Length: 561
Image (cartoon, rainbow, N blue to C red; front, side):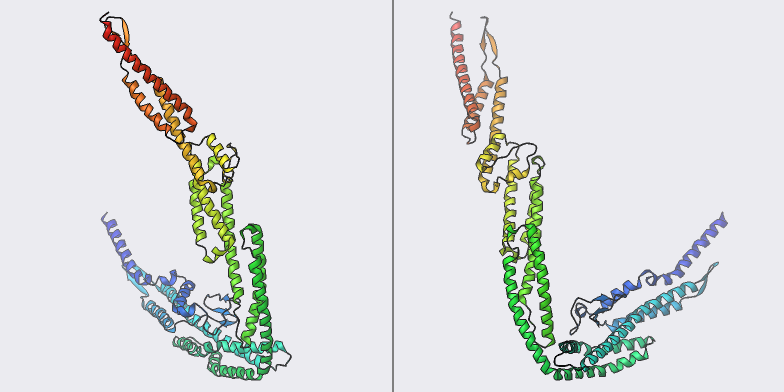
């Protein structure tokens, strides 16, 4: 037993020593647990200035078409131009140095060690960790290398394309070549500021790569050294081409101005027609409205493409670029109309489900809650909608339902009887039948919102009549159970009436209740019963009073005889 205990103790001690030996290795667990691509993406985003990451740099194309993300998720090309802003090189330097330091720490870890009776060979683990740290370093340096290669390659391609395009001779009647030349001059003008500021960041990347012994292709370095001089040559060529094409440019500019003037007139006619024919009216109907919206959407796309083409022409020839605000307003209004009709369709669908609900299944509370929620959403829509008939009528329909539903709730009172429904039909001039197939639509067809006071009066009448009916039934039940009691008078063998205190108490109470009922304006239906009971109780009181008076006189005279 002692030997077993000693073995266990030694094993536990060795396990503890092994765990201590393992700890320096586990400090670097992020090397194998984290994903390199994901972490690099996060680092690049954090190392990129937000003000420049939010949008393409000044002077670069702004279009959204033609974008494609690089497979390594960091480079974005727009129109063949690298638009991702350069990251902070100091942060990259610190990051790469961190992984290099980690790699050195791993190399310094012990290779072989004896822990008690156990010898540990850590070479496989060290090699794996060292290779992992190398992969992290490579991911960051390769990112910079690829950025330099991509940027310089794109610049060289751009310079070559511009030079070739501007060195071609343009004939007076060759508008196509003129447009190509003007496009090149526009691109140079757009990118001048960005390219002028790009040389230092590119050189900084190359120097950082050299610092960590990353080989940079000699041809690439040569291109980078010569690129600023090549760029100056491109700018001079663009200036010379601008002067050479000045006359042709002026002639083409005049044509473009005429085209723009003609387009502006057509745009005004288009806008007027849109305001006249677009589905701003509620009575257009949902189906016709959506069809009209689709048609106007296609028309707008067509005229917007024409406007965009003219704007591009104006920019090419250094003309004032028109904004065509009317088209933008039409597009904005078309979107708002779509939003308005979406809500009309939603409300129509919801209310249709309400109207088709059987009377016994109507849940006014949930309907009212949903209606309030939708109404709140509609009121939160852009204020511009409020001046359009489709929105005004929609809000009116919602408000109508907000009035109708509480009235429906009142009319669902258990006190409602057939006579009350008939009165409602007379007042609203509508007819319906309260049977198993009765649905909410039949009641809403009465346009309850127009008869709010009448509906309230009918439901109040029903409730008051129930109270009167219950009171009359109670009176009848009480009098059906009241009895007169007798007792023998002395030795005469004659029974006399015992003073009926409970009868007099009931008479006082019920006569007071009946008098109150007579003052109720809703007592009409029960007037005959009330008057009948008043008469009965009055006669009962009179008979008992006379009876008791005669009985007292007889009792006082009986001893004489």
